[in-house]
Length: 189
Image (tube, rainbow, N blue to C red; front, side, top):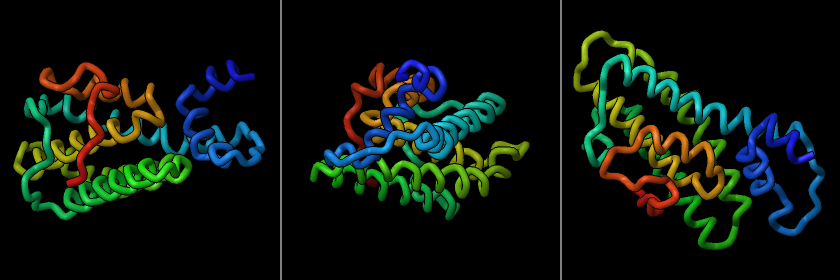
């Protein structure tokens, strides 16, 4: 029952599961509730947790983004450079897949990036956010994570429209479009 799936896992989980399945190539699909649960566990919940992590520490530090959010220019921390490079790579790959009508490959790409963001970047950058003093490295970490989350939302919005809209609206500045669905596809760095 679709209502059961929506209520338990959310429409975005079902949508991303279907878009990343063989059904988009008109092949057979063995429907599995566990597969939808896995999409929620591997993409949606970690993305939401990354957003929650950012908001929690940004609020504690009273950090606010510039009116036109951007990553730090020439970040000195290799973690910032790495996640920005990973973000750019994901954006290019998804754009290429979409331009060539490879919807399934595009939809499957988010899991790799979310894993990089949560299990590598955030996990290894935690101490930067926990510092008691607000220094340049801490500000770079905030700028980077804010930019990464916004860009992720713009890239993923056609695939998971509800969670990306929620995150985007919370992170956007007044100069940005009201909805993630009114934004242009991000330009790779």
